[in-house]
Image (cartoon, rainbow, N blue to C red; front, side):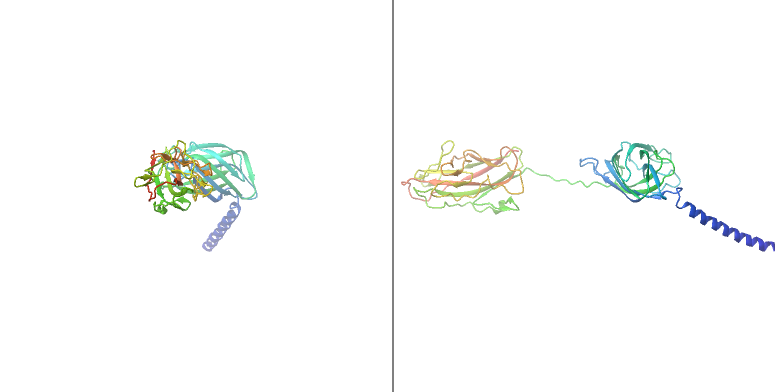
Length: 407
């Protein structure tokens, strides 16, 4: 009978123990003895400066770490006075040793709080500390940041926080995952039992370094006409340079012809375009090149061969010049680095008695004002006037344009 009684007591005791455990669970789960999980948490590695060598995930770089996370409340209210950010090699405590090993090369010694936003602000105090344990291979490495308010702030609902730490030195090992354990405390010094905890992970990454070389560049071409491709003068569109005047030479009206050239360079001192070649010739007969210093106006009935490099709208009142827009008005749209222009006296255009012409072999007719320039199209205008006694014949010349860049 005693044995049976003992058996009944054992089962009764087990039932009592199970009941107590259930009561304990109901009492402690909602209480402050256990920290709540920080939710919606993230860590973004940001560039420390505008320098290319300070990439956010670059090993050993001094960067910014941006934390976004949400703290919950345990019951109806909760006080938060400080938050710690502890950098570790693992998300959970290290078994058989200290709770956290500092990542090699990681340092928060120079940390500053550069963004303090969200539902709780006023974190005016920042302190740092280090792991000090012989079992940690990086013992002494400053790996913990604590930010604190002057007094604890009460929250009654889930609260989103954004905190940015600048001056963080990333771990020096490439492609290494590291963890930051975030803990919120009701105290203002990061001590005691945390009210909320959560861990975020990040990783260093090998930088991808792209290298390219821009060589010394000179674009130059000539032709009867040059078109644009995607708003950029395109030398592949240059037509042949065999050009005829618009009419037979006449002692009463001026004859005209045009050609175009495109130029561009990255030379620091820019480019200069010269023209060379003889005047118009038919056997022993010639048309006189305009050699008046400063250029001369069109004078029908005299012997004149000349040119300019600007737009002529009406060089001869009786015969408007069929001239396309020149460098002064044909800079492509969508860009701005244009320095090319005609050089005096080849830059005097207009109409009637205002346009001037000149031709001296070897003259500079255009340049980029001593600076690099994007592609532009120049239009050269040629005129011929002849007297009534000008011998008949086929008059030709070959003009050579040379573009010289000074690097």
